[in-house]
Image (cartoon, rainbow, N blue to C red):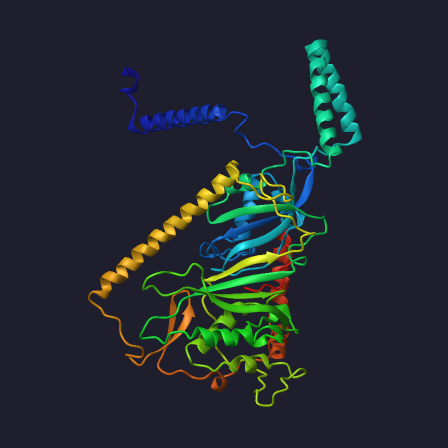
Length: 501
């Protein structure tokens, strides 16, 4: 210590700083040496593994995501495709550097923010457990290496290995002779559900042809919209009136007044075919004094942007008595080349301005495919025989996670019902129209308030399809499209297609 007594304050500070630097360097070296080779990032060569094209069937909670489609620009919430893509990369089923295009990614139906799905489908190429792809030269080199290794370890050990390999080949030959696929494919359901959040669940997968497209091979799309009637003082819903109005949607019609026009798509044909449009009470119905829950089922081959939510908005207006059932015929009478033959039905070149309903209760329920194209299977089911009860980990884990989410939701619902019962002790239910405020059903528990209701046919009209397309082409449209195309190309993402919701 005596040697430091003659040092100045500045010298002492400099000496301490030098010791701190030396100490920190030692820590960094020790930390680097502690990292085992197993924990370091390893290069994964996808070219060394075989691939197969599969379809994935999955469900997701729309309220937790910014829609299905991956976006090249930042979004407030993650997208379903973004999370799913990351999970596939983490499982090393696809190559992140190759992007969406590299795995031939396709989707069945696009859903917007807040919209859920019980049976969404994508198709892509993934790594599989078939024999690795190796060149003839690599195969010969591998055989030489094996021979040298056998000589080194001893002839006896090498003979045992050959016998084991021969037994495996014989067993595989028996299976192939019986027309069976080699067993032990990657457990896609189990692997992905372990990585994905509980709000996205892989339900099944299927091997598909190389040219299969989840979008273009889909034969129909089935949407459901769940709803309740409003409580007083709002007008209740007349379900039979809504059912009558829904029935008029069936068939091929021009639905330009039941969607959101988008000039960037440059769509000119708005005819779509609806094969079924029904309203029913959800089974099993609720018991006691609770309001029944209803569902609107809509099935068709394809849909326009926000078409389902615009349709439901009009059905609510009919159900509450603000519009007549005939308003459906008027809104469908939009194509001058194919007008309604009934002269009493007004022709609407422009859409009356109205708001669509909330997206929370909307679900893409099912994407339908021909059986020859898709045969769904799980990790313990090959898609050929009848499903039997199984104790496979993937089945147990899937059901457990989904039942846990349902239990939490039921508890929240029960709490809210008890809160309402407590409030009812001090605040009785008012009569319909008690405060003379017009309440319009907006879906998902939302209500729009107006001082006076204005009938649709007396409202202001929006632009025509031609005007929307021309405005986009003659405005900033081309520049925006060019920028977006550049971002999509840089991100390795396929072009956005027309989407329903």
